[in-house]
Length: 126
Length: 132
Image 1 (cartoon, rainbow over the protein chains, first blue to last red):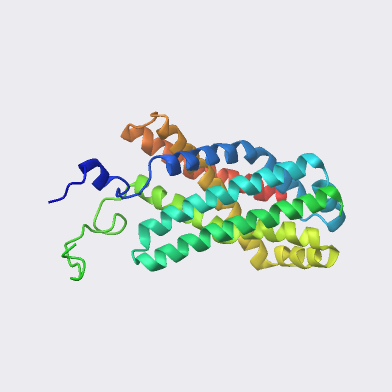
Image 2 (image 1 turned 180 degrees about the horizontal axis):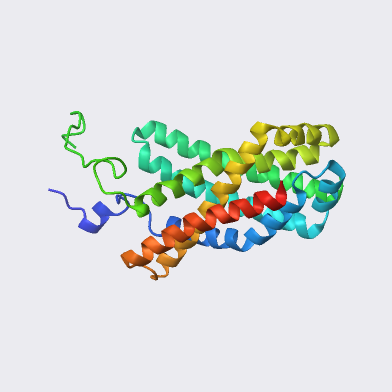
């Protein structure tokens, strides 16, 4: 006879294993990316085909550096959340799914770190 | 789980796109939003990262990346990235509107879908026209 409380038996065993945190995080990061879109488009268009010195001049401004780091953080976070859903939807081999989710998380974290360090280096003129 | 070792051969409903169902813009745009997102995750975001790395690495690295971006393949990648960005942007706005509980009637969903298609093509042409 199972003496466990029914609530204790089902807790943590839902399909997602979590609540609405992922869903909300995806929306909040989308909203921040939406706010950053005008800067991204204007900077991208103005730097299209730019030579080294013009690109250096643009990215050495503290405003552009801050926006780039904010964009990198939000973008790679949103990317991780999105790829996670795609993997969870289509990869049904438990081990492969686990490994892929880990790889995506690590790759997005490393991509953000490198972006932030590169943007800082450009802004500080090191 | 007694059934976990047996192979699953249960009947499945046909895939939403293809000859089995009447064409719906909603299902096509749904998968397109996901595809553009994956494309940007795999191609566009790494390209932006490479641009920053090249710029931080110096003149020679930046010249190398600029040469690639100026080639035919580079221009194709940029065009596909700009379209993916435009479509995912407008598709994402649709999702945010639905999340607020608005525009959920079928005729509104179809209308916003066509607006997203036209808008993403227009935005792509504007960005490519002013930037390239």
